Image 1 (tube, rainbow, N blue to C red):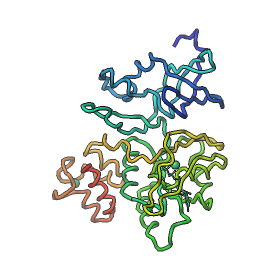
Image 2: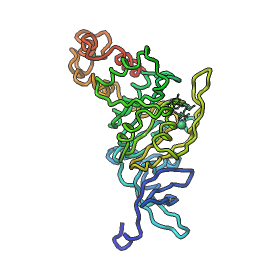
Image 3: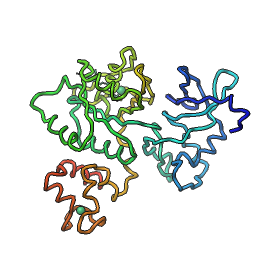
Image 4: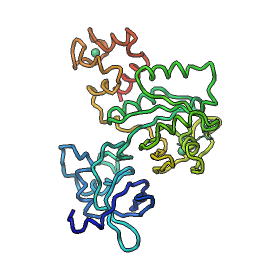
Length: 330
Ligand SMILES: Nc1nc2c(ncn2[C@@H]2O[C@H](COP(=O)(O)OP(=O)(O)OP(=O)(O)O)[C@@H](O)[C@H]2O)c(=O)[nH]1
Ligand SMILES: [Mg+2]
Ligand SMILES: [Zn+2]
């Protein structure tokens, strides 16, 4: 950047995207931006990872399908004549939540798609009931977040529908013991909202969870007046209707922002090698490398397996170990 033109540059955060347009929040107002073709070219490498050494040139078709700017990105833009802006630079990302794109055409390969950049916390959201929580899915979310170096906060909502006799609390104790923070909420009854507000204040959080669990309702309850669209879950199947269909970052009046994702099945997981997977289970971490066969152990039937011994000793719960084995086989 030339010092002489510096006064023309503004910075802001991308909070919403449509095809070709990027909505940038800067000093309390929004500027609609496009991105410079030059930036698109320059960012061929940084979209992989600014710290990555694999600066491999991809073919031109591939390049055009990678969006170099993600929600949560801090960008530098210049004003254009019509009150719009042109993004000229993306500040290196602290981290990113990624998912594998659909294979664009036969014979090509899937590539990494950045969903949100500069995330402070991933918040897996599950309903106490309707639909019932899927603990192995929670494990997938937590492992994905661990693998991306992102902190997690577990939120259980629709607590007004929880029954005394269900095993919710016992299941949650597994996660409490590992050290994951948990907040119990009800958008319907307003429970747990102050605690959740404290947790999201001043941070960028991402709600993640299946359709119908109540993510958008929770966001509406966090900030009355937001009026985001919610929908009934199907009474027969208990499934949601994918009401939230696009990504958008919502700024909270209390400070901080939340990205409400439309039911994302998984993120990041495919990148984790078999050796690294156990490291993404914090309670298994102390035992990794301690097996008789060291890092060659598959923790299945090998003698002297430290991880299976930890399961037997009650230091790793059988349920989490089952999740681990399931994730390893894809
Ligand atoms: N009883 C009860 N129902 C709730 C609560 N929160 C949400 N719901 C209901 O659950 C249904 C789904 O809520 P949404 O907020 O649209 O769920 P979502 O997770 O955003 O779903 P998608 O946008 O499809 O991913 C709606 O009918 C809500 O009224 C709650 O705390 N208690
Ligand atoms: Mg929604
Ligand atoms: Zn082992």
